Image (cartoon, rainbow, N blue to C red):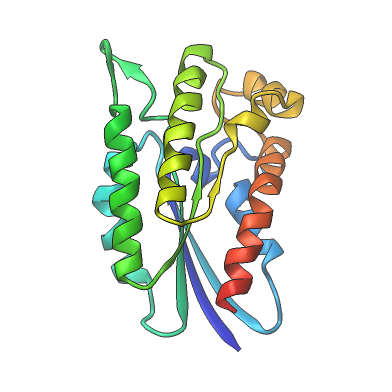
Amino acid sequence: MTRLTVLFLGDSFVAGVGDPTALGWTGRLLAAAHHPDRDLTGYVLGVRRQTSDDVLARWEREADVRLPGVGTGAVVVSFGVNDAIVEDGRRRVPEERTVENLRTLVNQARARDLAVLVVGPPPVADDDVTARVVALDARLGATAAALDVPYVGTVGALRDDPVWHAEVDAGDGAHPGAAGYERLAALVRPAWDVVVDGLA
């Protein structure tokens, strides 16, 4: 039986904030990967309001206590919306540093022989933030391609998704409910299946 450990690293979207089923997109992917010949452990390590700076600073500590040293491991990382928010007249994390944080995290994960999947940031109700997310998504996608790791952009598809927007608008202006997370999970699912099957 294949033993696989996956760390989902990121922000409140990774944590599934707003989903009354408490599954988010990560829980849905883990459920889809269940197989009698696969011993899969998934750790959902999303923290509200965290930026790429925060995720990069903590991820190796998270990995140290969760990776068993046997079997295979993978990291699914997703951040960017909090980076793109402007507070006190300044962007929380400059775009160039977000890109460099992703590059550093991917290289650190590879040094641990971990597979990596990167999921881009989704849109929110604030049009200005979403515009910055769109620009950041392009940079993150290009960086992932240069590093030869799979990247799933979400902002392009979800920006025009009526279910996503209806739930975001009905909620806190950022997070969807169950149906929105189902949409996000469906976008990530093909790449997720390739990563998991490749480690089996």
